Image (cartoon, rainbow, N blue to C red; front, side, top):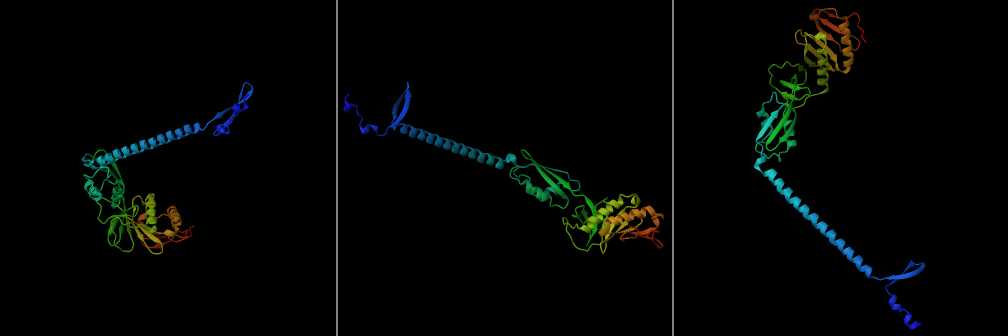
Length: 302
């Protein structure tokens, strides 16, 4: 064998690596060249092209969507087709529709999509008579306003006589035809405006006590209709027909009610003969008749 011709020059091994391969029980060797690197580079380039195409497609789609959205919004908010032409009012009893519309402000001919319904509802509930309000759109051009009015609950004497609801909100200074409301007196005279809230603990406790007393059979034919605020947490209730006065201590309301139940158990004289019942004492009930001041036989009531 010619060893000179069978030798492999060192330069032939550059860029090659030997990989063992088993074939027919023998280990053979094969070589790989750097040409595979060219294939990898081509694959990376293809992936870059695909990524760039994907980004361009998404940008184009977003641009198209933005274009459609802009022109769609412009059509909805500027087209006369969606101008409000019909406004309906629901839930109003004392307020007429025109008064509600005037308080709501200009809504006719406004675009139905551009109207701020939350701001409109907030504006409506600032009206002294409106307790809550909700707004609903009906496409293409209708707006429905639903309100819940406040309920007159009592009258209160300040610088003049006002009407308030059960939340203490001043409704009006005018008399309401057919309104048979209890009267609160004894508060410091001051000027208030409709919509002002004057509720305090004394008024709350007094009105609640009046409500429960009037549910008793004792006041069925002669209900309490006046509630007077006095000094030292005392209040006086006066009945409508006979003018009987019942005194309570707001700091011991529970005990005052218990004392009144005791009075009902031992009461023997006619209701028409009683001028006042004082339940504000801790351990006794004082009943004043039209002629004399007497105390029940059992004066220590606990």
